[in-house]
Image (cartoon, rainbow, N blue to C red; front, side, top):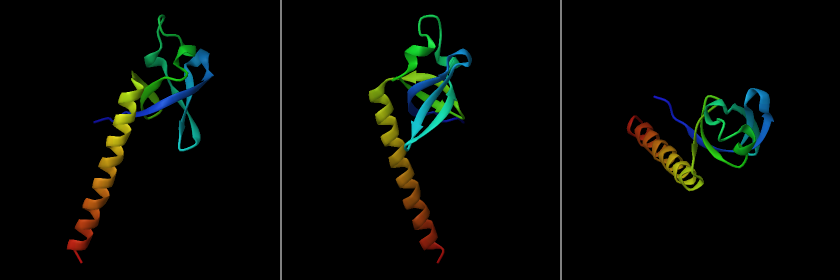
Length: 93
């Protein structure tokens, strides 16, 4: 199973090779946006858009509102997992 994390494309780092930058916790990371670029949607038009990112590859565009909902859900799932882990640790003491 693969999970795409919504991230906003903040700049194009190399238009010839379809590379762009996303920002994660204040740090920029380079990703390949080849799968979301076509003749009707050129590289330069991707700046400011949200995309689902997995292993450095933008797998598809996503609406900003949906991106925020997904990020919130992922945060909640992470918190639930931490609570479950804590409960399991306490049961084994």
